[in-house]
Image (cartoon, rainbow, N blue to C red; front, side):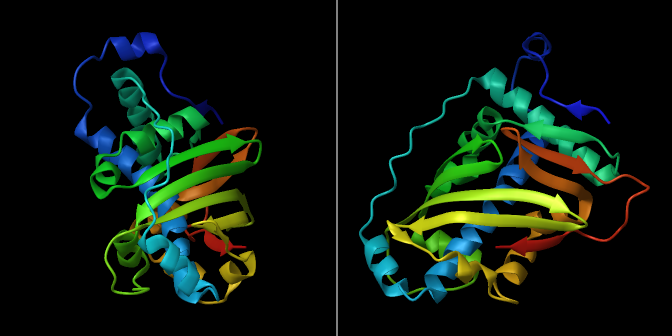
Length: 245
């Protein structure tokens, strides 16, 4: 199995001009799929945590988290979006291909996402070995919409999250292990994320997450890289089962 990486710069230079719309949408799809689970977990954590009142109180007056901006070149954005477009095509067609994304490529997707910018969302990630360490600053009203819950009806403010996760796949189960999750400086117990028929079901219902679960053979982080392998014709039609712990 050949693992696909982004195109070399020489190829990119031959394709100057605007970013193809299909490639951009593919990039949005991947970044949305990666972040949806985190956003929903944040929303549910705010609703269920014993310290929900403290978290909401802190979020009401919180300014957005100061996250160092990642500024990729237009050529880099176009190159990474083409790679993501190929990934989604492989997932859709069931080619069995493998793709990999490093820290810089994921941050390129996040920084180039116009929907996130328009919504006031800031995010940055770093892959370290088998872990993804991230920062996410998101308006309170957006978390309410994503999770389907309304912690309260107040106005502005931000949920500022830091998280440390591991992602692995084994025997048809995609496991997302939260080593750490904090909201506005308040630690969220990882036991909250293991509540049955709550976090798992709500995350799995989101469209982008469903697409990944139904079309991917494996999704995992290892050796400083996010690896995605699409299903092939020989693989089971069953979707991956999501396990959060």
